[in-house]
Amino acid sequence: MSEITLLKPVTDFLQRPHGHYINGLSIPGQGNNTFSVVNPASDEVIAKVNRGEEAEINLAMEAASKAFHGSWAQTSPMERGKCLNRLADLLQKHGEELAQLESLCSGKPIQLSRMLDVGASADYLRYFAGWSSKISGETLNVSLPSLKGEKYTAFTRREPIGVVVGIIPWNFSIMIAIWKLGAALACGCTLVLKPSEYTPLTMLRVAELAKEAGIPDGVINVVNGSGARVGSALLAHPQCAKVTFTGSVPTGTIIGKSAIEYGLTRATLELGGKNAAAFLSDMSVEKIVDGVLEAGYLNQGQICAAAERFYIPSVHMDAVLKLLSERLSAMKIGPPLDESTEMGPLANKEHYEKILSLFEKARQDGSEIVYGGHALEGEGFFVAPTIIRAKSAEDTLMQEETFGPIGTFLSYDDEEELIVMMNATPFGLSASLWTNDLSKAMRMIPRIQVGTLWINMHTFLDPAVPFGGVKSSGIGREFGSAFIEHYTELKSVMVRY
Ligand code: TXE
Image 1 (tube, helix red, strand yellow):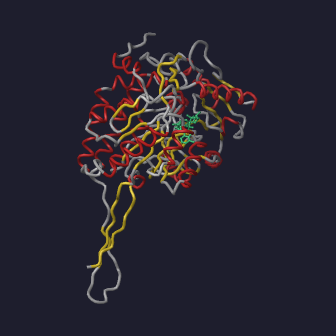
Image 2: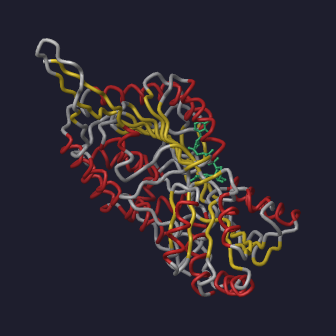
Image 3: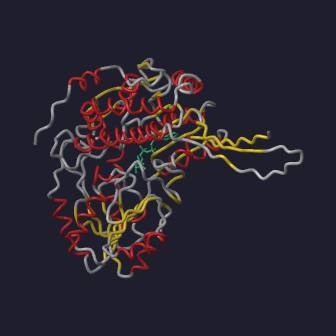
C-alpha cells in the first residue's frame, strides 16, 4: 500500500485562505466565520473556508447579472464554445492537481477522480461547447386571414434564461458542477455555484482556470456556505432566474417549493431514489455478479443513479450471494490516494453515521446481513461493502435510499411480478435490466417507470443521452439536446408585413 505524493500546487492551494470566487477574483471572506473541510480518510481538518454572508451573495448575483447583460451577451456563440473548450484543455492540464483535491475532500479513489471528475468533466465541456453555436428556433407558417393583402410570418427564438444558481452535492464536486456550468454557459446564461459544504474547494480552483480560459469576469461565481443559509439566499435573490440542483429528495423538494414561491423561478431538480437492477433467469451467476458490482458499489455506492435494489431469480440467489461475498472480500479498501484502492471511505461523518444507523435498522427489520454491515476499524469513515438479503419488499433497505455500498437483494420467480416490484417506489431515476433475450427486454422497456433504463449495463452516463428522473426523482433533464429547453426561454415573434 503506497499513497501518491501530493503535488506542490495542491499543498500550496490548501494553505491559502478560502472563501469564494466572485467577478474574476478569489475573495477570502471576512472575519472568523469559517467551517472546516475534513479529509474523510483520516478525519483530519485540511482547510478552513469562510461562509458567505449577505455581502458576498449580493456581490456574486450582481456580478453574474452584469456579465449576463454585458460581456457574456456580447460574446458570440462560437466564442462561448471556444471558452468551454479552452476550459476543458485546462482541466486536463491541471488534471492531477484537481483529482488529488477531489480525493482529499471526498474520499473518492484517485483513479475515479482522474477518470470522472477530470476526464469526464472535460468531455462534458467539449460536448456543451459544440452546442453553443447550434441553439436555434423555428420558422412557422401562420394562418391568419389576409384582408387587405397583408402577410404574416412567425419565428421562435431560444433566449438564455439569465442568472442560474447551481447547487451542488458532495459526491462529484467537479463533474456535477461542470454539468451545470457547461449547460448554462453554452446557452448564454451566467452562473453562481454553491458547492456542498463538505467539498467547497475544487470549484474555487476551477473558477480560477475559467478566468485563464478567457471566460469573462462575473460569468462564473462560487459562493460557499451552508445550504439552508447561502443556498436558499441565492435562490431568493431577485436576479436568480433559474436554480439547477442535484442532491437529496427532501432538499430538492424544499428547493422546488421555494423556487415557485420566489416568483416562479425555473427549476431543474436531479434527485436520488431507490434504483432497481433486475436480472432475468437466462443470465449466468458470474454475469449477474459482474453486473451487481458495476451497478451498486462504484464510489462506495455514492452515485445517485447507482442500483440499491437487486432482483435475482430465486434459482440463482444463493450462488449469486456466495460469489458476490467472495468478490467483495477481495476488494481493495484503503486510502483514496493509493492508486490500487478500489473502495475508499464514505464522504463525510454525517453520511457515515447515517449508513451505520441503516445497518442497525436492517438488523431490527430482521433482514439477513450476508456480508459486511459494519464500520471498519481505524481512522476515517470506512465501512465494509455490504450485502443484505431482504425478507420482503417492505424492509427499510428496500425502501430508503442508502447512498452507500449496500446492495439489498430480493428473489423472484415471475417476470410480471418483477415489473410490479421494480415500479413499487415513489422514485424513478434509473433502473437496469439484464438479459440476453432482446425480444423480452424490448417488451419490458416501456413498462419500467424511470428516466434512464440501462440494458445489460448500469450507472454509465454520456453527455449525448438525456438524464433525469420521473416521479419523485426530479424534474427536467440534463445533457442531450434536452438541456436547452431548461436553460433558455422560448420567445415567439409574429410579424405582419
Ligand atoms: O444532501 P443535500 P446532503 C443524499 C444521500 C445523503 C443525503 C444527505 O443519501 O446521505 O442526501 O446529504 C444544499 N436550500 N444525497 O445533506 O441536503 C447543500 O448545501 C438550498 C444524494 O449533503 O441534498 C448542498 O450544496 N440549498 C445526492 C446540496 O444542497 C440547500 C447527492 C446537497 O445537499 C438547502 C448528495 C436549502 N434549503 C446526497 N439545503 C444525489 N442525488 O446525487 C441543502 N442545500
